[in-house]
Image (cartoon, rainbow, N blue to C red; front, side, top):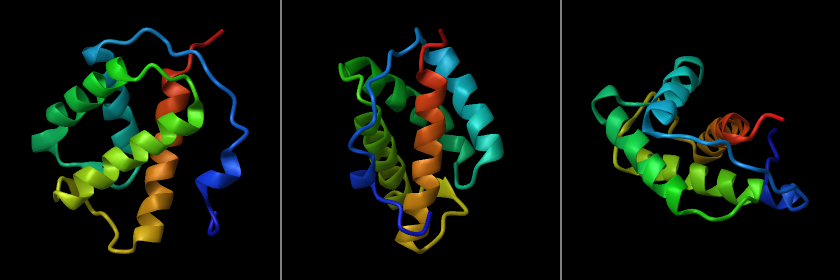
Length: 113
């Protein structure tokens, strides 16, 4: 994953989002942040989930690549404000970590058929 790039994923298919509410988003991110590093600091966790929920309600796009880019950018925004714990100082490593988290998020938001 050293040469990870969003441009390699141009052919990603669209996906259908499942129904979700704020509580489901909080539960989803609680599980994700138990497993992955970096983590959003506990004092801003609720705010992070609310921001994601508000953003997700406004996005009317079903392209997986766009969702992953938005999620990665959101994590970078939180990192720049100092709201992440144990974040690497290396942007290449952070991008890989955030891409993994974004991939997990899209997997959890995908409608299960």
